[in-house]
Length: 252
Image (cartoon, rainbow, N blue to C red; front, top):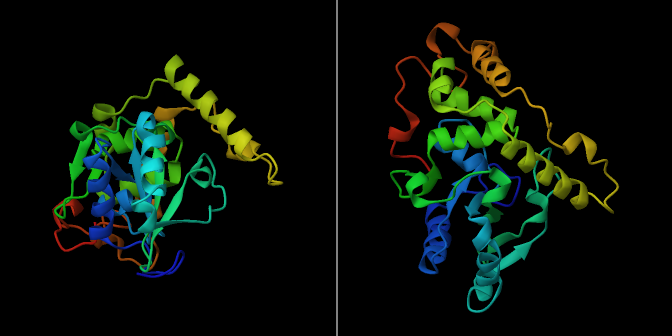
């Protein structure tokens, strides 16, 4: 299934489900976020690995479970990745399945600012749990992952009215507290690695509705010039194409 960074890396629905089901046996509910979730919702991504999100309260227990026998005989820890803006993924444990090029990251739900609960999951035809569309969109908006949000908008061909109906745009004191706490963790994670953490920090005064309108309003502009615009709704969706969640022959 490839090494990290190769085009075919990160596949392996059965292997991902094995991790998810193992966690569930220990009362740790999890779902897939990140690039694989974007693929589920129609974005054209080539994920390096699976990003498996667990409740923050269960994060230490999940990590311990995967790094102690008997599962330590099945999974190996591998190198951390280079920091990315607004993310703490480089601080979380990355695993590989021994003998097979299957990779996943264990992520606490606080990094995504989502409720990691079965009632909030949408399962693919293969049975993989992903955050429900509105939950995932809100997560990307709250955590200011705007490039990912644009991919989600284009994958699902979302309209401005959809956001007005399903998303929260008010920057509440609770959200500001979350942003400040995450910024503190980001700054601490950059100590000693010689990289300025300021560009990686989230804005404490985000204009969420304006950002949403801008992303949705530029869907047509993001369609590549080589694509026939009259046949495309977005860069990822053709006219008449089905909801990507209904396509059953995909690795999601």
